[in-house]
Length: 112
Length: 114
Image 1 (cartoon, rainbow over the protein chains, first blue to last red):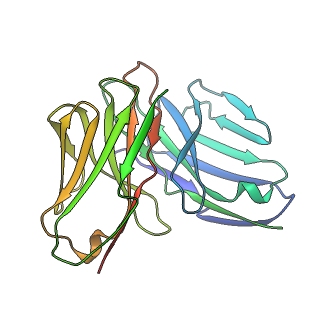
Image 2: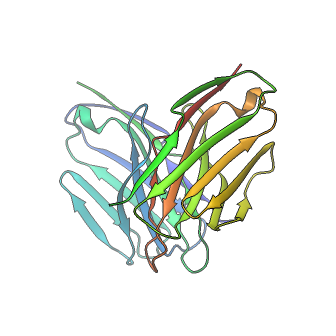
């Protein structure tokens, strides 16, 4: 079945440093989504990427979808303590498949 | 706007006791509904999903079951809890819209089985 690998599992940075997490799918995706889960909270949808090579920005967050639609990345510029949490990617295969395949997540901690 | 509710927020249950967790969605019709479990510090494990009333698909064979008695109600149950059932249970919904696969999660139920 479809697998989505996400690295790194953990990342600790100093406030102000950049951060990147990567996702790689075993199969071509219809779309990829990113979620953020704050400590003690539930996953919250951030963004969906659909087009090959698509790049989207949300303030200090930059999301990319690979040309082959099999990989994606989330980059945070100049991290802040509010960025702390686990970032999940989730691959969608479209069509009649109703499920998302989630990566295991990257836990980001930020030292003030 | 759409909202999703889960209760209870936290639950401590003895081994062997039954379980019933409820999830309801407001503001949408005929959503896809999902139950996930998240162990401490781990990823999301899909347990069940439902595309309509009475339609349940199981992803992981275990002592849990799910039911969808109404369009916007999803229930997770167990007859006898195991220690390994402890975790954070998340319900999610997805709108039936072509090209939109986003799932929206409820606040979750933290279950501790002792």
